[in-house]
Amino acid sequence: MNYKRWMLVLVTGVLALGLMAAPGYAADKTSGMRPVAKRPVAVKTFNARAAMIQAANKYFKNSPVPVISAADVHTAVLAKDAGYQIVDVRAAGAYALGHIDGAINIPFTTIADDASLAQLDPAKIIVVVCYTGETASMTDMVWSMLGYNARAMMYGMSGWVADKAIVGIDIPSGKAAGYATVTRPTTSHKTYRAPKLKGRYANLAAAVKGQTKAYFAKGLAPVISAADVHKIVVTKNRHYQIVSVRQKADYATGHIKGARNIVWTDMADQMTKLDPRKTTIVYCYTGNTGAQDAMFLNLMGYKTYNIMSGMSAWNNNPAVGGFVGYDPALIANYPTVK
Image (cartoon, rainbow, N blue to C red; front, side):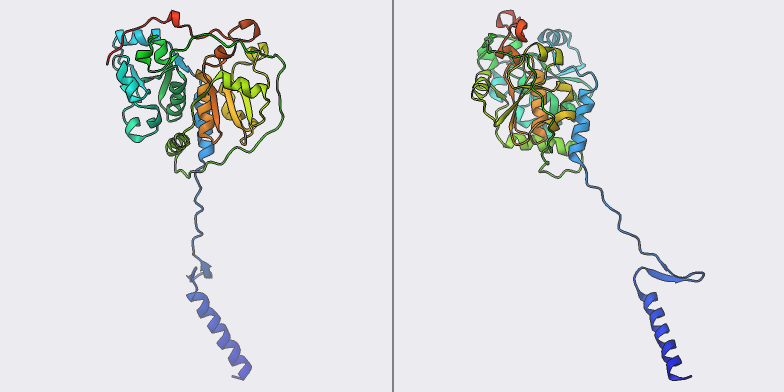
């Protein structure tokens, strides 16, 4: 064997041995060398934002009943209807002043805690009670996204008994400020990138609970007064954006100047119409559905306030788009227990 031929045989043998020893290859009697190494499986990151939007729409798009009247709750209490669970989300001190018979206390800032959620019965309609209806509606949004059948009691404890000593705060007067409304719509074709959720979550429940706790950690007030919003409108403060979540026909009859219209059940689909750099103010008729949308937006990373008592606090003249809401003289003053 000459030198060149000998070297060719030697190099071929070395290459063959190298391939056999290389990771990912093994001998195959029929086809020679074949790859056997498995490609790494791509692990999909849980899309918390998409899951929360889907959960919100599952509630919004299925004929939600956002509130229940105090009269209907009273009927259920008298009948000892086992299909209801009443949860008072006022502070413990206010709950101790007087509450609906059978109601348990889960303070508002703890509604996303595991210990609090463990007290809820998923087989029942959960009636949420607060002071005036707003924080109960915010709670309703969170618990509905978690799969519970929750609804807020209209006007809260002030709709059950018109007594500050029991409700725990001043009773709403029921009188509107009489601020001006306009009929000219405010429109915008801009769309914005929704805020990124700062937390990383493995599933929907973790995302809703985590975002709720993040909201509470900011220490934001759940509501803003009609008087404070009026100042914002008069001064044309560009750091704010106002959204009427009432139905289109009611918006057309009259709305706050500068407010655009996003019907409350469409908020999850249309939130990208809102500028995340601005503080968002939402309002509805009496404060309930506005509070739900405000909570949803806060969960999604927007800084949002709900107008206390909604349009009924701004202007309650139906001729200009107003809405007649709470009237303390009409409250039945149902019994409470301590």
